Image (cartoon, rainbow, N blue to C red; front, side, top):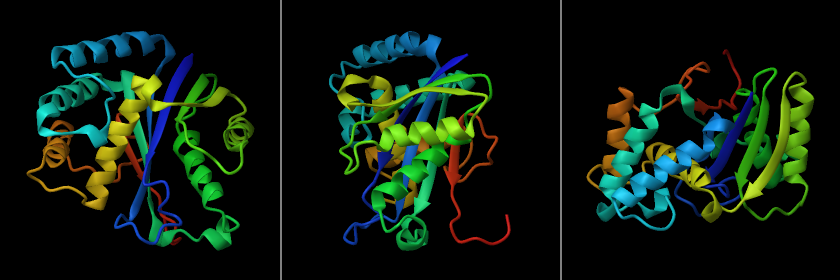
Length: 234
């Protein structure tokens, strides 16, 4: 069976930035059957038209004027059950040792964490098409290397492609941006409870029936992998 995966990240420069107030970097991904792609894109467009919302669907564009739209969009996503899934990895920058584990290379470390987002949800005998939000890399072959690593560790599955797509060209990348931003805002405590973003976090937690935080590895719908880089007992 063929699956699409759409990825985006929040605070990708945290591994080298000393000025950011944020502590957690988040890489998020949307997973769906390829055959469902057109249906989901059409339904998102219908919700946007209903609320007369133009432009991109992004966490950074959440405002009171668009709050009802984002509330309905969030409800729509969670009502799709396991046909539409979200998985994120949360990285505490205070635990990252770039020098020891990543050759003091922030970009290399970033893509190692990207690998962790994808690898654990790839199942045998399926084919995966991975779309990452476009970003400028110092080394041009980062995505090809990521694909090669996924291929080498998932011998009974096929990773057909890992390619960059600009967010404005893909509403499903935008969806990954929105949910990744929501998780990042929760972890980094970057918005007030009575702000539109704070209200969306509360809405999401109400619909999930629990606080946004680390989940077990088998959580299929809204999976948050809070990676532990300190060692110790599992």
